[in-house]
Length: 148
Image 1 (cartoon, rainbow, N blue to C red):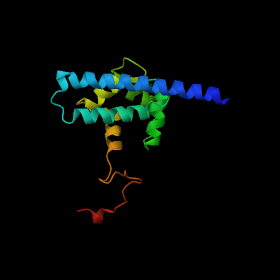
Image 2 (image 1 turned 60 degrees about the horizontal axis):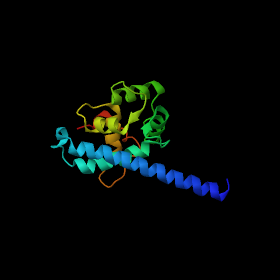
Image 3 (image 1 turned 120 degrees about the vertical axis):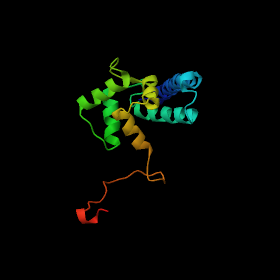
Image 4 (image 1 turned 135 degrees about the horizontal axis):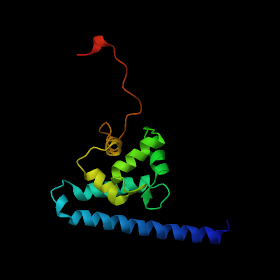
């Protein structure tokens, strides 16, 4: 690709990213102003964290998390799922109304009281051993005599 086209493509990508950032910030503002969530602890920080995670999951930068993006991210997190399992996760997150997860659906799922499988995975992914690292392997095998 000639450099002029590369510059044009880079400029377009920047514009699309800025538009996506505006859309996500607008949804966050709606949640911050919603009386239903006024008692939610650390809401602003949580919404910012959700936004970063959502952008990470939106692999095709289309504004929604589709089946393949979710499947790839779950594999990266070390929790591979079948297509059917991923479809069920999307249906849980959207109430069955869509085949993709919008940011609004994502935030509702993360703030919701129901423990969807995807929410549990996301919460685990955000936790580590206290110093920012996640477990890299399963716990060591133990025999019955070592149990308390």
